[in-house]
Amino acid sequence: MAEIRRKLVIVGDGACDPDGAPSTGSIKDYLDSWCSGAFDGFTRRLLIYHLDGLGLHLPSPATISTIIIVAVTNHQLVANPFRSVFSKGTFPEVYVPTVFENYVADVEVDGKHVELALWDTAGQEDYDRLRPLSYPDSHVILICFAVDSPDSLDNVQEKWISEVLHFCQGLPIILVGCKKDLRYDQKTIEELRKTSQKPVSPEEGEDVRKKISAYKYLECSAKTNEGVREVFEHATRAALLSRTTRKPHKKCLVL
Image 1 (cartoon, rainbow, N blue to C red):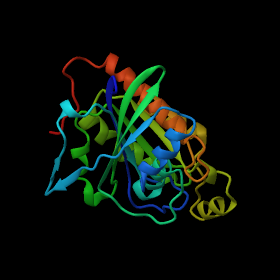
Image 2 (tube, one colour; image 1 turned 135 degrees about the vertical axis):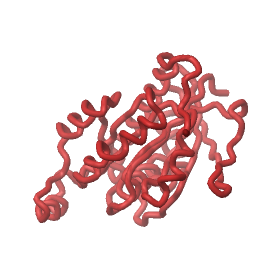
Image 3 (cartoon, one colour; image 1 turned 90 degrees about the horizontal axis):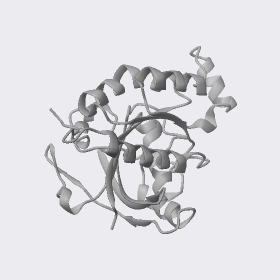
Image 4 (tube, rainbow, N blue to C red; image 1 turned 60 degrees about the vertical axis):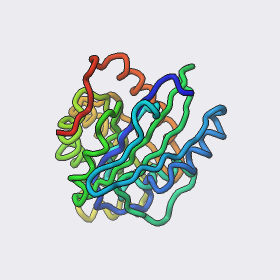
């Protein structure tokens, strides 16, 4: 049984091209691949949560030990493939929209047994009223954008950071640049040039990290699998850090 319980939430927009993005399409499969590969001893469990009207029915905290990672993403653009690669180890070719997808894995990081609960949220405006239901009792937030979409990085500052700070002030935030494989893709470069844009550089991502006071800036590619594992490793460590630094009784509340 896990010694530590943490929750991670993924958040972001929902109006971008899903091709080349990390996906939440099937976290379970990637967890199977991840846990049976480089991380021996990990166990996987799929938890199914469901919506009832505007409410979520969740198991009681006493029965679930989790690091909950809430990821905020430009959802079609990055979250769906990101989650799929994390869970399946495969890159999805078709985007399947979701409101919430939730998975749990028992993880050992730095000698600590942690139960990591991953909540992937829908970034579309249609779900703005539902998305905050995923925030309570979170321990770390992933705010994701796509390297091939400068607009998605703008939205980190214009929308996502304010929402995260409103509902989860004081939690560690990791800014994630997804689809890094497209930074030097000529087709992507040509398409962005038509609108006088270019792929987001690592320096631009780091600059935004500083502006929003995020814990760390990381990049990954769901298509090549580069950096995906590292994102969740750092997220787990940040969640462990938040456990020791957060003030007693301070929780992420929906008001």
